[in-house]
Length: 266
Image (cartoon, rainbow, N blue to C red; front, side, top):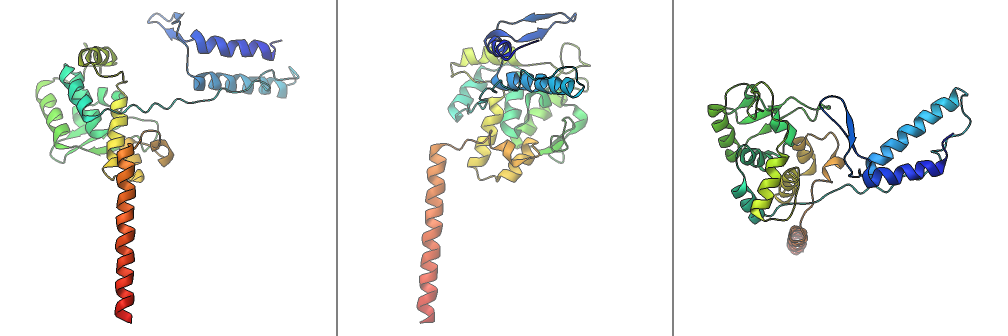
């Protein structure tokens, strides 16, 4: 029978280097890199449910996971590129990374949504791209193109053959990842480390700072709940100061308006 202290050891092992990857031939291997606390917690939740099931069948009498505490989760990463960092990064990008980066910065699309983009889902006349992928209805959405994004897609539609606008070596398949190209661009640009996904964070933060409301931003990002947007939108201190000044100006204007109305009545 597995005891609680053995599960505690499992938690530690997973955090330090219990990440497994699957090879092309079905084999698995340890990467030597740990996983996030959230991943360990999902493992524990699965084990707990399994033990509860066997308890209900009368096979066992106690659940060793019941006394094991979940790990604190703090997976939010808030890296947002400045406009200068964007300029340096894009200058270091080759193709197709440059186009992928521009589309992420201009539309907030996820990397895999761009990889799987097909020409049939792009309507340059109407100025939008439709993303048919995603587990939820919100993820399957129509996105309006900025002029910059439209120019990128127009050129790709003219120069790329096949259905996928970002194909792999096999034109019938989409490219699997741009992470290798991204890491090379980071090294060449000299900017602080960021993930490719952080370009989506950057889009969301800039949208909030430009005055886009959270309901609209959630729709643009493909989220079904506003709460999901909060982890992407991180207004800068400068923006927060401007927000307070704007509210202050509004309050003073209304107060002066009320004073004027009161004087007129008298």
